[in-house]
Length: 182
Ligand SMILES: [Zn+2]
Image 1 (cartoon, rainbow, N blue to C red):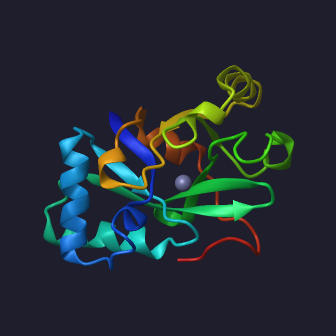
Image 2: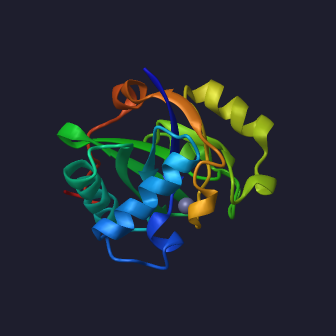
């Protein structure tokens, strides 16, 4: 089933580094529902715990009104990669805003990524859409369009119509020593 999903958001930064409380979870759910999304990935910088905690609160206390995919935006050499975590340790990775702030060196990351952002609400003007499109076709990468929201209002300004099964199918087992373990 295809769902309307924004897969790159910084909800904790949007809430000025709020703690993952039930109230925080409620504010995030309201923002997501206001945009008519089915769900989001929560992808704080170098912090996967926040997304996991919000997912847990939403599912346990709010009746699962939206889908939350826990994730994290990770700094690698000259790029940022967003990781989305699925059950059984599967991780789907995509190159965030390719071309910003560094030039695209896709060959450096091909063994790590299964997707690539072709649109990003925060760094839109910096992206070379034709080049990204060509790279996605050449290397069979999933093209994604995400908000990279750093405010609640920006969540869902960009989104994908996508089947979570498609992400899961392309996802890989965690990588070696740099892998995050949860
Ligand atoms: Zn980001």
